[in-house]
Image 1 (cartoon, helix red, strand yellow):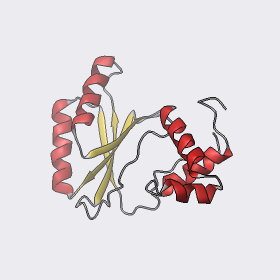
Image 2 (tube, rainbow, N blue to C red):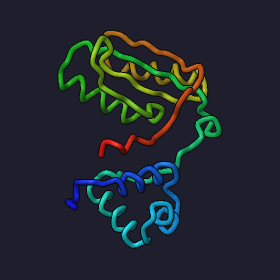
Image 3 (cartoon, one colour):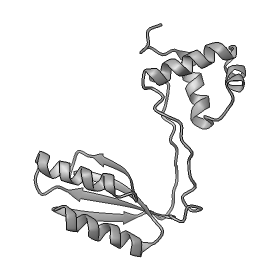
Image 4 (cartoon, one colour):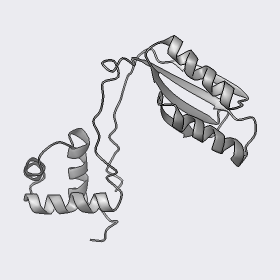
Length: 157
């Protein structure tokens, strides 16, 4: 098996680790039906290939006192590398911006922002519009989280 091809056993390992990456290798091995050493080797190979990018602690947003999720859609005033570089530096420097994507369609970029309250969001918003020019800025406050997962489907490997 090459370093960039993955099989059903790798899929099963990934499915298990995406739910609980703290499981001991022996437990993963029991669930997959292999001994610990081949499981460990497969995990290391997937890490080396970049498929497993890291292991993190998922923090409860409400207990971290940032219960408010706001999605901000922006339209660039012009599509130039200089503007994009400035925008990217800005969002990298604002810790409340936890996700950001470039889109197709009428909205050029969307960001997910987490804050404790609307006043803090306004501080973030004011900073953004002071540092970068936008054609439009549209914000939507999330009323309820219907689904949240960091797991990606592995059936396409």
